[in-house]
Image (cartoon, rainbow, N blue to C red; front, side, top):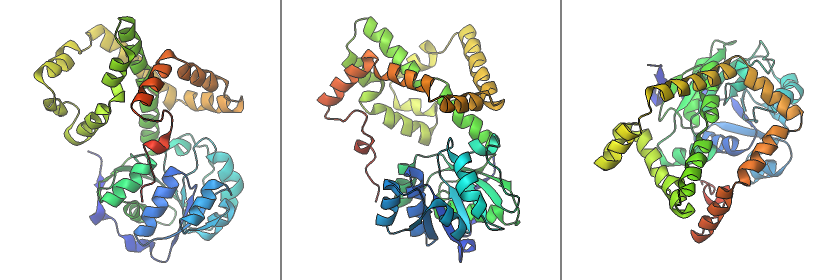
Length: 339
């Protein structure tokens, strides 16, 4: 089992006298900044001067341009989107770093693909929450915390691990458990989870059931629109994938365990497809493809997005959501500010 760290393994006092700079005040940045401040850590914010900058000020933080925040802080959490981080880091952050600064990234992506030029005089760690930004705040306030993956990628001062653990405690992650990992492991698992086709599998199931004559409302409610899947996901997380089946009827258990079990040839073919996805991530083909896509103006992305949102299922989903008094596509309906 991977080594795990909890509150008893993390000493917040090592952050005393140090200033943490949260660079990027989006969902993760805001939640981590608020949690750190509530844990007694000195926090400043770096962001471009936009609505997020104004929100940081409204939340009571001293906010600066990215370059000034980089110069002022002792520990910098780079919570900028992966796709724009290399350019922003090179131009606005790296030139302003002091000797002995610590850099914390919330993803292994740019570390694994070596997309940023790490200065040798810095400590570098990855603390990757296994939780969306709103959940980072909500679970901190509830006292539950959330798990994260941690790795020390560069230890210039010899204090990278204690500092990283203190930061993890400050954001509330050591309450649940922080697990020793690597930039490669985080990147491959994270991208794989996004690549294996979950949303298309649900849409395909919708298509065959409605083609068989069943109403879109019944199908959508069965698969996800009822909200039951959220409760099942919670059962998966707290009981285990197969142990949670005891919450279902025996008819349901039989259908999932026996009828739903794939035939050996299908299982082998699907595993081969999934192994190819891993190879595509590990050898850098996906990263190169994604970089080229962005540089070309996102043609494939925009086509796929348009195709997805123009599918007949989306119109049926909209009608159902209107009947349920929900706002399709509005994240504020699901994630109001956690204060």
